[in-house]
Image 1 (cartoon, rainbow, N blue to C red):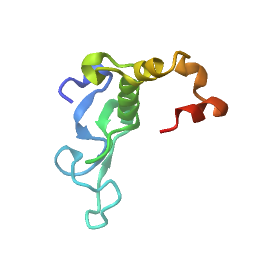
Image 2 (cartoon, rainbow, N blue to C red; image 1 turned 45 degrees about the vertical axis):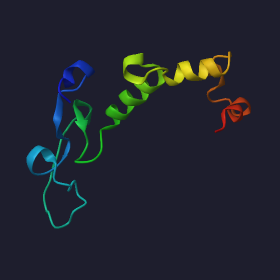
Image 3 (cartoon, rainbow, N blue to C red; image 1 turned 180 degrees about the vertical axis):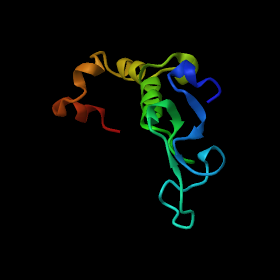
Image 4 (tube, rainbow, N blue to C red; image 1 turned 60 degrees about the vertical axis):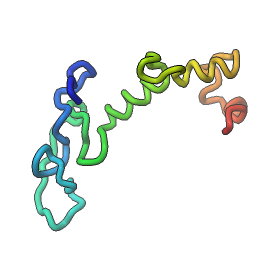
Length: 106
């Protein structure tokens, strides 16, 4: 949020959909008592969708970091490293394969 351009965003403070300060009033078409709200034209530029939720791009960045982010973000292992240590086979070969995905049930 402090340096959104570092992660490919233009705005790390304001919500894409909402009203009030920072687009932070929980409206975005949900709260009928607040009749108006603003909607951005490009959600990919924003970290926040509304006052509670990140945008799809934010979720993707978080998922990518959890999968193979550096140890200082998701240490001691990211998920790719954790699964690689669990099983010597590459996880990429197993993803999407229904026969082998059952081996990774929790």
